[in-house]
Structure formats: structure tokens, C-alpha cells
Image 1 (cartoon, rainbow, N blue to C red):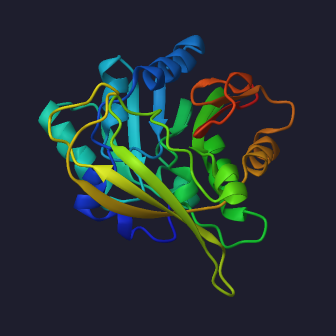
Image 2 (cartoon, one colour; image 1 turned 60 degrees about the horizontal axis):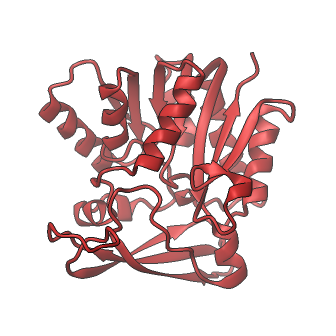
Image 3 (cartoon, rainbow, N blue to C red; image 1 turned 90 degrees about the vertical axis):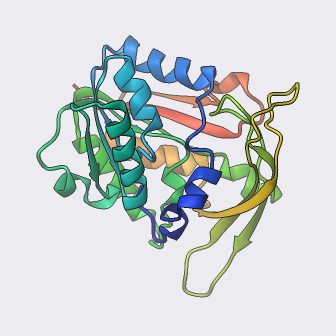
Length: 273
């Protein structure tokens, strides 16, 4: 990841509380594998690998994977997973989205770049035109071979900006580990607005209720996110990849028209051949 403030992602307790070690949902796996398989992708860069869970899913499916993250703590978790799984052909590096070409200069020509789990909105952009987002998208594009695809997503910030509350819907994980969510827009003179999302995290007890929620103690975790609208996010991607490029928009891993109130948006943008 690439953040203006990485403290939340350098704390071991927060990393585990945020559910990044939990098993992925079938909807997530079907969407990701479907996108990659339909385009015959094999060589993958996961540019927000976190603790390495998604990279492991891809590796076990036979994909060639390079993993990177801006947080050294996340990279260390992923390297521990590599050691435990005894996978020798898995490169894991610390790399910032804003300097991705330099950080990963020995790589390139990927079939796909993945930046998922709403990682992108952890980048707090203080520029008036989201120049840091544009630079990140340009760097993602530079890592793709002609015809390669970017899979990227983010939380539905529009509903938070318009109605002051996030949509609490379990989309990414097999078990629901969030009992409640709240949001607050923080305004500081001379600095960009930041939306703080507070999660009431359910600490696993090994049991689940009839709705698939884990029972256990509740702990609060607050993460600052960039309040960026979906239309702006998509327009920057289109500017970077070209208005005529092949692209698609999804909501909670379904076609956008099928979901009235999505918790997350997913985008697929293809680099011109």
C-alpha cells in the first residue's frame, strides 16, 4: 500500500483485527479467478499484498506471482507465510505505488496488476486534482504488458459523503467480522479532508451464528480513508488508460446494474494492445 500515514498498517494487532488473515468469500474468488482466466493471465503483480493471503490463493491456482506492499509490517507477514508454505518461487518486496517503476524496476510485462481490498483509498491525496492517484494509476499501467489488465477496487465513499454512513456488508470474507461501522469526516485547514472509518471488529471465538458472523469480543479499529467519488476514480483511470480502452465496472463483484447499494466498487481496465 502507499499511504500518507502508515501507522495503522504497521501495528500487528490492527493487521490481525482488520480481518486480512481471514478466508476469502466465494464471490471474491470467483470474480478474481474469472477475470484472470477469461483473459488467460498468468504473470501477476499484487500491488497491495497485505499479509499475502490473496497471493497464496493465486500461487496455489498455478499463477506466477510477484507481491508488493508499501508497509514493511505487511511484507514481513507475507514473507513469514512464504516461509511457512515453503514456496521458493514467490518474490515479495516493499514498494510504494508512487515509485512503483523504480521500486520494481527489474520487473514488468505483467498480464495483470491487482490492487484490491479497498487498499487504494488508504492513499490520502493532498493535491487538488488527485495527482497522486493519477501517478499511482500510471505506475500500475507501466507494469502491464500490452493487453494486460488492472483489477482495482475501493469502498463506496459516495454514500459516506452524501449520507454520513458506510454500508456494512460482508463482501470480501467468508465470515463477517464487522458488527458495526461508523464514519466521520475530519476537516483541517490547509489539509485534505479525511474520512475516518471506525470498525467494530468481532474477535474470533471459533463459533459462528446462523448468519455466518463470528461470535466474540468487540474491538474498535479506526482507519483514515480518502473521500473520493466513484465517478472521479473512474475518470482518472480512463484518462490514464485512454477513453477508448476496454474497461468494466462492478459492484460487490456483480454487474453494476444488479446492485442498488454497493459496499464496494471493482474496476477492470485493459492496457491498449
